[in-house]
Length: 279
Image (cartoon, rainbow, N blue to C red; front, side):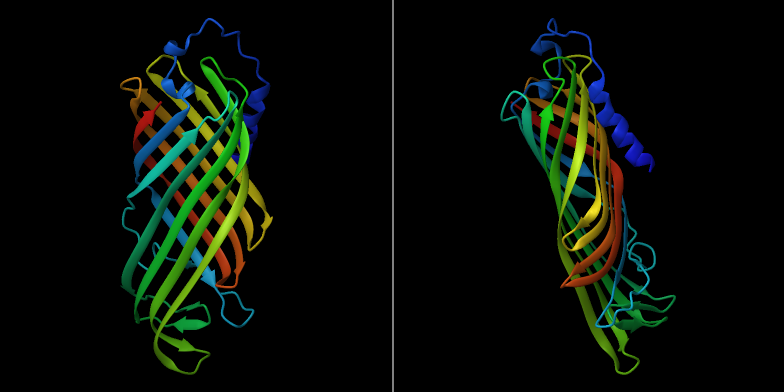
């Protein structure tokens, strides 16, 4: 609810009338305020949570399995991210962002749990793997451009590829007990709305905040998604800059894909250090 309130405040700021800014020249603001193309390549170091459940042929849904803590996949995540922007007209732009993680771990179970119709008992050695790739596509219209302030509002889609795997000695339907490998996966295109605010106090500095959100029943997914980021960019030259941002991404809902029937709750939040090119 707090994050939704933040989004409403951000979008509502579109109604604020800023002072006339015709006297502000392009050279007085950060190049990202007027560049046609921009590319950011960054190192993302988030803390991650990946809780998932999967049911087999029965209609019974098993409790969520905490892959990060219960299955010992809680080491620090480091991954590369890429963010590209294209301003194809005076007021319209398109951005694409991508990052992903692939985690694996081995552990001895402290307690018994069910997964995809199988029962893994306490004391058993298992291997676990979880993988998530997120691609964000976003079209936006710029309502406060040409000066130090810029407010963009738009819509897009998050395309999410995710999978979870557990391997070890397991019991099937309280009968055979043998080594089994169970893998579930899903492809989830989730639409979203969002707002993006930028402020450039000088030709070198740019401060930004954006928020994407959606909550609905869409295709094989029913739930919500959040993607929030705040950042500060510094222009080293007219075409190269560096930046630091903090990004939070959350996905929480139910999946009814033919390859995965269950639920997923995953979260990424942490800093991003990036190198930026703009022209």
